[in-house]
Length: 150
Image 1 (tube, helix red, strand yellow):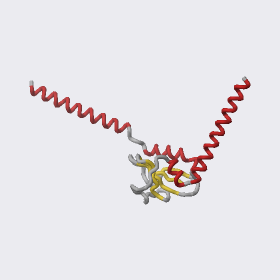
Image 2 (tube, one colour):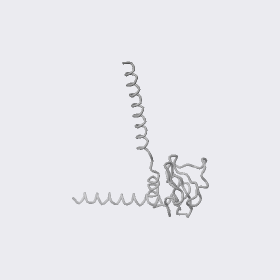
Image 3 (cartoon, one colour):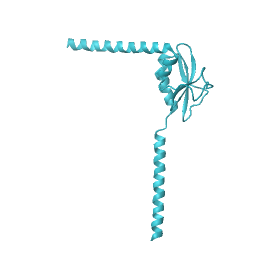
Image 4 (cartoon, helix red, strand yellow):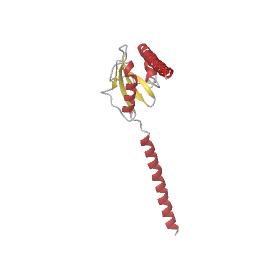
């Protein structure tokens, strides 16, 4: 009887261990960041305010990072690394990471990075914001005029 209890206990412990491992890997897989998709989101967000933004064709996207080539409105070229630590300029030309260093400035957003390195980005973003607010104001005015007519 004691032998059966020991065997059953051992089986239960192994089962619990397997469940724990399975839960861990399921959690990990569900929370893996798709860096290619993240880079694409950044590219879409900044496209209106830069001359060019694209995935690096030479530096591969991995499970931990992606590289984006950017040419600013002021013609400044750079290669930017995107990872869990944020964004970091790693090269002064496209597809280049020779400046990759742990001491590089890290930016939480592409907007912070571009604001820091390109005054034309600030002007472009500001103009875009003014245009959006003006359009919203006109839409609101038209809506009020329609209410007054009714």
